[in-house]
Image (cartoon, rainbow, N blue to C red; front, side, top):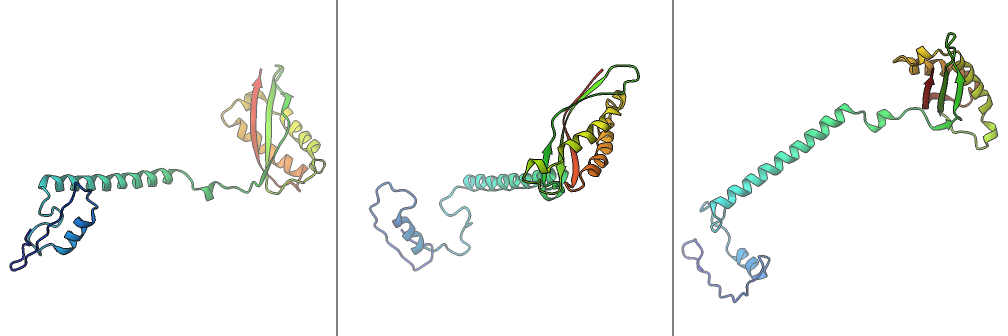
Length: 191
């Protein structure tokens, strides 16, 4: 085999079985024969056909396009959703109250409300169950619920108004708990 530089000669007599491209002999031959300067395109090499380099370039472009698409989608999806730090509220723990069944002021019509309520509190709950004023909390909830009207609860903003009425009543009954949120886990109005 001869190098393309004039006056330089290299003879290799290597008996190689059909070896893998990672063979040490091939690696040493590449080290001995440095590429000639400006003689051919280094991407295609002297033995590579032009069709193969075009295919490699297309593959590189496809990978870059895919990466840009993934980054763009990730940015687009994250822009619409709040991050984990934004969704965190002041609620440290929750206190689930038993379900309530209350007769509603139906204006001469019999109606009742079946509702499950969980409270979000900003402080850690007491270790002993007896230290949580569950009876006072249930009494406050029942007094607010019994004054509700079924047509108001069935309105689009009825649940939000009920939460707005319940929150100050509960905070007044148990200020030490630090009640911050009210979650309805069940809600059924029967008329």
